[in-house]
Image 1 (cartoon, one colour):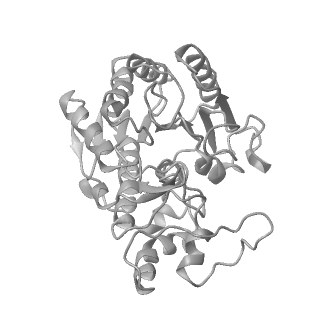
Image 2: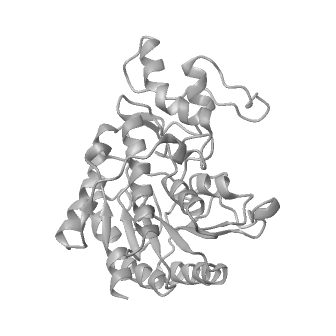
Length: 343
């Protein structure tokens, strides 16, 4: 299996407001380094750098003004006289205006953010652009032919980023960008399966009214798990997309017995939809020792995930999302890939 990777991810490591304290993000460079080391150790296959794609390739998933904000936010922040990490201060909630973009950077940060976990730093744009290009490179390799599967070792992750906002350590939605690229390059139907512990609210939002991209997510119940305001069972899609969105929220403490049953249900839906390609948002924060999650999956369970996905018999792009137990993220992510390859 081809892996696409770039050291550029190290240019970004922001701060977050967590438990009332400003601290370095759990989403750190060592996450990607650990996964890469495991890919190389297990001789998964060739590791390639990404191709460079233009910003227009991200516009199917994101608005042009949001992309412009990401490209210029750090310079605007610095121009205001500040050189520490930029975090939002105020959000347009409930009855506040959310249609007009503020002119000043403090307002823009809140306008385009859902939480205080998405700091803008000097290297953020270059890192997130390269992360998206990794996903595009993986999809391009699959669509070019000769590759049944590829792994985009993306960092920062992407599945919480929506059409016009960032959140949950995510700035560009790598999986959604890759799915849109597939649609724009010949795929009639695409499915996106999100197996991260946290609901992929951004991916859901981007495709919620579409019937050409099926979105499915297994995640912690939003009644008591981030992102709290997205991921309930009754979110089924809207307009043409009604029935093309499936959420399978699971309770705290879910182990393989419950998780495997939910994954089987998701796989049945995917098989019925018969997509030309499947994008897997590969979060491994479902692991029993993850510091910010509450499922109970064991290392070997990730082999089973890969095996179940392989039985679908369709091309798959794996896109790295979350997973914050750094010592095990490489083992668990690569176990999925090896389980897929061995099935």
